[in-house]
Image (cartoon, rainbow over all chains, first blue to last red):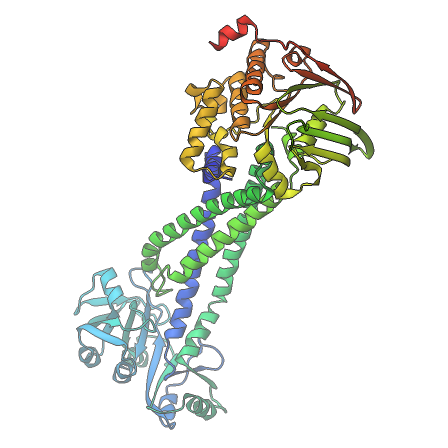
Length: 388
Length: 246
């Protein structure tokens, strides 16, 4: 079948072609977006360091560890520094804007994270001021924050008794050198939080979410992890020590098997669209049965007919897929900003484009092959007898 | 093939169809020979096997038994792509319902069979335009079938049938959907193709007037050869119909 005939057949029913094109575009768009989320989650895991360990409660990440554990962990051979990490979970501007806030030990946090590059203000200024904080560049850009500005945060996990906001004064703005650290986080002093609790400004028991352990050069992570776990084997709180990479992986898994869920949604959408396209192509071939009989009578072989109909379906799906990818790419720029707090590093990368295009081709081939095979097996006489 | 050899030869051809579990014999041991360069009309009552015979000669169908030899080739032994190639080279079809592809223009429809030849795109285009000019449609080349009258559509179909210069034209009720005057114009065109270009034409028809335009009339009856009439003076287009052609 000639390219002109294929093209004219596609244009013969513009509405049907546009709808088919649209459904493929929508399916590929969704798959690309979902794949980008999965990739972003995985890349955060792969960029994480294995030279940093995380000590958390063996029960759950949401169970705090005693403050007394810090000195015991610091005494384990191979441990360079220990830094307390506390999820704050506060809200800025009446809950309308979410970003992560962590209470950390300023003296050990900075040295443990060389990936953190303070580009405005200074780390020392942060370390020297009890209510100071460090914010990521992306966060500063979003809210127009400057060094010296006060950021009021309403504590949801740690609400003040008087209902007032926590005030953090920006002492530094950082950029991340790797995706292990995202630029939409606020770090403040753990001691600022602890003192407030001890003074009764917050009615909570003091505790530590996780301990971050920075290893000495040459220290064997596995041995240190075993030693820390063994240290608290008999309580009062058992701990689970993992590398940062493993911790990140578990965190992603904890999100409720999000990658599996996202892939399942993408697969289901594709499956549904596949049948829609298959039905369209079957209908298109069936209503052209007599034309196919004419082509065969003129001397066009069964193979010609098979290839022609397959190419027609392929063209439709590849074009739809390309549109889906293009739309996903354009929209991803905005989406990336909107979900940066939850899914840092979101982008339509080569992997997503390849997946989208691969699926479009597969969709076109499979949906095209079935009617093309039927058409190629048609006997010319029977095809010529077909009703209009 | 020697000049004296018939261009179409059917030997003991049998063909039956199964309908509702019942076997219906359509052609029952048909023997027939047709000369090259002649214009045949094929007549007979409905169900006598006219279209079946045409389809067998054109390689659109295969016999259950017997031999179908066309242009020196055992068509009954050809299969698949080989048969398609043979059809493209030797036979041009004209159908009752014209069977033009609605999405293509007149010229593109005529160019279709030329895509199976080694001609370049410009050569194909020139050849299609020549064929359309020959059938009197030089001014309708870019029209789609829906923009043409029935007679014009059938002319395009005839142009498509002769575009690759086949030796045989098989026409199945080519005037069946046309009014008398237009039918005469089509029959006149077929006569000219036969006389001026030497095409062997086999035309299935129910219409005795249409059959009068042929040199010979083959009568089929219940799947067997009845008789062959010779028209010593085939009918010519009426002055009225000729005037319409302009």
